[in-house]
Amino acid sequence: MSDEMSDRTVAKPRYLFFRSVLALMLREMSTTYGRSPGGYIWAFAEPIGGILVMTLVFSIIARSPALGTNFPLFFATGMLPFLLYNTTASNVSMAIRYSRPLLSYPGVTFVDAICARLLLNVLTQILIATILIGLIVLMYGLRLQIDFLVCLRAAFLCIALGFGIGLVNCYMMSMYPVWQFVWSVANRPFFLISGIFFLLDPLPVELRSALLWNPMAHPIMLLRRGIYDSYDAVYVDELYVYTIALILAALGMLLLYRFHRVILDEGM
Image (tube, rainbow, N blue to C red):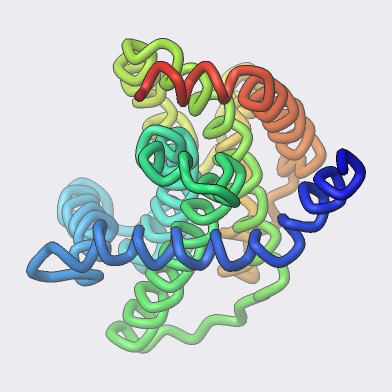
């Protein structure tokens, strides 16, 4: 009897995992986008608004951006990777708290909730980035030789880093709610020092070396290498970013696996 139950436990995830993840993604889409008047349109507001504001400000104080000749494209290549990382970390970190009522159902685990929010966010942000870059190219008549493989590598860096940080924060925010405020404050400087508004390459050696410790600076440089054929991005270190992401993801998953029952019991 025990062997039969064990076999069922092992076999259950094989056919329930994808169904659970899909169901959670559909629920997420209906609750996040379906209840607002604009739906998915609101997801475009933040990057478009940020790019317009920065374009207006910097076009007044400078004749050309730090790379290329188009301000919106330069800012988009900095802001979109940061948004992919930031929204991935945010959605993963809130996965258990958001889906807690559903985790009491048989066959639905905290891993399902995390994967559902991760996949939906990644698909949404990549769609937004593709449409926004395409609109900028069409509106300004730009001729770009885009290296899509390099752009995809940059996206994977953002996703991996956001996923690792999100898993650790998922545990921290579930066990210690005050951590959500602490992390919100601690994460804000990364928007300023990740190279969204400037290039790290021409900075003094000491300052550049210090900023390169910030893992988010690397996918931004890598994406710009894929968009601008004249930009080499010689200081990108993909292994460094993946190492940090893997360590954080392993730590976060270990903590969640160990304490997820405590987290769920405290929420009941």
